[in-house]
Amino acid sequence: MDDTSKKIIITGATVLVGFTLNQIARNGWFKLYNEEPPSTHPSEEINWKKVILWSIVTGTAISSAKLAAERYLIQKLDL
Image (cartoon, rainbow, N blue to C red; front, side, top):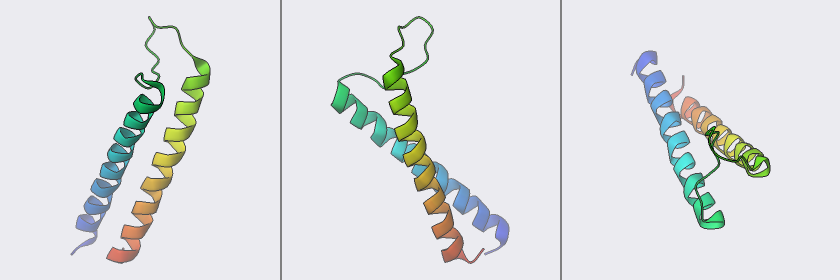
């Protein structure tokens, strides 16, 4: 397998991990607060506490998982 194929596999896997964790976080938020995660829709009242909490949790969890998946695959594929 050439390096380009390995990079495509790694990129695809990290995108899949990010998407999956985002969906898990959204479902968890809905179960916890019985509402959709906060957004920056201009017509809504913004609860900054929830926006910051959502940003920290999803940003940290998703970025860390994507990084871990990428590093794991780089080691396994000997890139």
